[in-house]
Image (cartoon, rainbow, N blue to C red; front, top):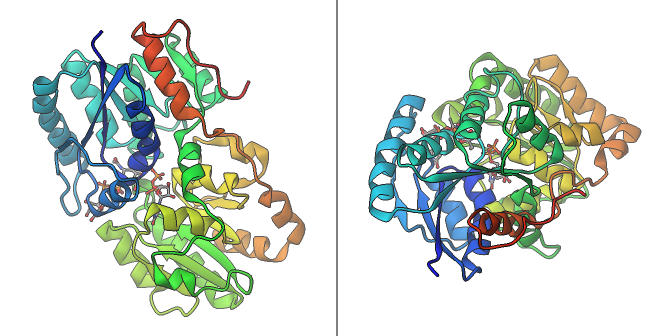
Length: 382
Ligand code: UD1
Ligand code: UDP
């Protein structure tokens, strides 16, 4: 019997981190031939992940440009994939989440009459403009997909409410699979500055910020609030691996460079990042992925956005969405330094996003979809 040809297409750092364990898992099935195509929407930040997980892509569209636009990314992914799909004819293309690579790859597969599997399906903020353009990217990808891997039951409900009811499987999030292979007690950091930090003596805060809808005033507010807090709290140390977006680099430097207890460093490799997260006092971020990882590691998270598509950890009490107003960001950070009860309440480890077995479930459901298994996989969370 011929193997099922599965082509995973991704292009940015978070997609790569969350697809890496799946790519490995798919390769372990005799019934599957697993191919990887990267778009290169990110370059250095993608390559860091590929090398950390030792994945060599079969195809690389290499599209990244400095300060690239959504138009540019979308059109280059579409035209680049046409050739790859025509020459290789996968049975199914797997895309992840909500990036422009994901949406454009799903559209390209649909144009090529190739089945689409959507990993991390069904997350919704219900605001078309925030996160921008991710909310529309994932809604449109959901419409294009033939098989939907929803991390949680609430993600599944979102799809049902949009009339998407067939081939929806609750699998858990693959990021929890990834984190199980990265965090170690005796880990030595590749980034030397992280080995020099005394994680007991300081309240170490891990921060990141990169969202497009935060460009402009919101991002300036965030940086100013962190500067205010750092100057006021000499017991704190802010560690900030700065995203390579020229706008983010510029804004971070403008407000935070030269402050003694703010460590601005280049983007971290994923092993460094997860192990750093496991040692810090708390996390401040507008990232999607960090909102899933930090609760699993028992770290409180202040989300620097107006909304979230990940309400599970908010409900569990370990994540708080605080917006981007300068004073609010500053005061909530200070609260978490000073209010021990609040801190302990938010610090508990919760894992609403997965149990480390998402990749197996996704693979088994692919086999089921192609009639190579009698039943779908078990369901996460039951
Ligand atoms: C993209 C995704 C966003 C995701 C984020 C993860 C879209 C529209 N946005 O946003 O959903 O949360 O990735 O980080 O799909 N750059 C480099 N080297 C790199 C990566 C980026 O120099 O390795 C610079 C380039 O100048 C690039 C810019 O960052 O033009 C922005 O990259 P882009 O992928 O367009 O947007 P992100 O903000 O990274
Ligand atoms: N990450 C990393 N190095 C960094 C910053 C983030 O490895 O310097 C990882 C992080 O642990 C998570 C993912 O990248 O797994 C999140 O990516 P990002 O915040 O860029 O995107 P989002 O999740 O918001 O789409």
